[in-house]
Image (cartoon, rainbow, N blue to C red; front, side, top):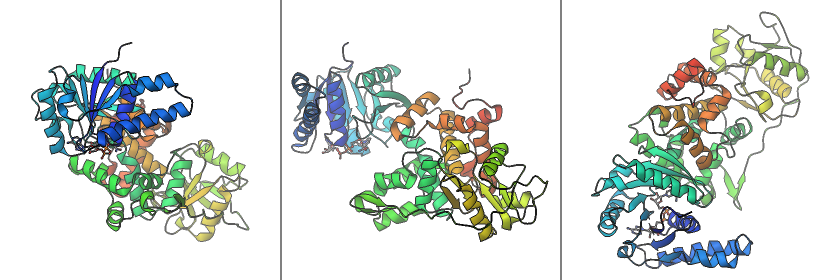
Length: 506
Ligand code: NAI
């Protein structure tokens, strides 16, 4: 099979340029690496060759393959040397004017049929291409760091990009062992746009004092299956990187409330509390290990009152079975007895609202999050309301911890933690489909590979039920009166009709 682009140039021999050079040579291309900083191109070449040497040491490639790969990459001294390249990938500093200038110069030197791409993560491809004589041959080709391991690349069509250019780039990506996803030129493209929900909603929850950072991380990992909690993730990427991304996407979408950043990260950024790399973020780090505060043990109680479950509880039959299996006495009356623990399981509503609307004794009312099937989670989450008595809270906590499953008790919040975060992620993704940023299939693929979520956001919505997610959002809007929770038309229609969130109209 012949490689789609044989002679390629890569400008910018930093973290990204090197990674792209490596997979391009592995795909069979001949790569010229160029950098404006004296000696950087040669250092970049040597670093890539060093990666292949490691593969030889591990027995993954043999000496002949090493020689072949090493012969495919060389350092260039100036732009003129890229004249014969069929593809040039720009991975220089993230600055619109610098990139524009570079493409202007580049275009004067390469053949008219050469494809020119930018690896920008936050600038508009259209804006970079606007200075070019032939913007139709320019596209975004957005890789993720570290390039050889992150197997997804966004192919971004600028306003004037020819579809054929995107098609060829996608085929070339496959030759590099990467999955291409196609995106329109919109702020954040796919991955950085879809990723807005997780951290921002978790920050809002923390900002309301619903739970501390470690508890929110535990809940999202154990209930919803995220590999890293939102605060662990923010510590890893560091706030000097992630806070500006939050602000940039929010502002590029003209202050769309769904993307509103948090004052928490702004203040921490100002204080220099950036994350793992500064030794302190949402966690403190000792020898690079996060110091996670221990989880409070389940209380020990003498008596467990009988339990009355609201007839309107989500997954009520399952909840009744669970309470029974945990050994509590269940009340079957139309109203609770005077001593019972009153259990509610709302979707989107807070415990306070449910207690008030159902005329329950708030001092004995506790909520449990059952949007996700209890059997499918590794943690239970209970919520009190401001009036809940301590003995009732402790008795409920002890009861639900009886089989050894960890329990988190949080303060009252519409939608608990997982409901809020999942509904926000799903809603943003649905709105991206509505805005035609990309296809539903590419959205889920990009997020799974680019962000490592357990499921793509649309698949996540399908798993928990589009109608449930819609109900959570409607009720969150009522509780908070905040337009950030307004459901996207895409979700509203598919949720109302019981269709899959990936469903595209004929
Ligand atoms: P980097 O700072 O590691 O490397 C940039 C390189 O470009 C440096 O070696 C610098 O000397 C060189 N350079 C700067 N201006 C130049 C010019 N006019 N001509 C030639 N070389 C020039 O940066 P990194 O992280 O590799 O990022 C490069 C691009 O990739 C940026 O647009 C960035 O937004 C984007 N990107 C970065 C990701 C990351 O996680 N680091 C992920 C995805 C995209």
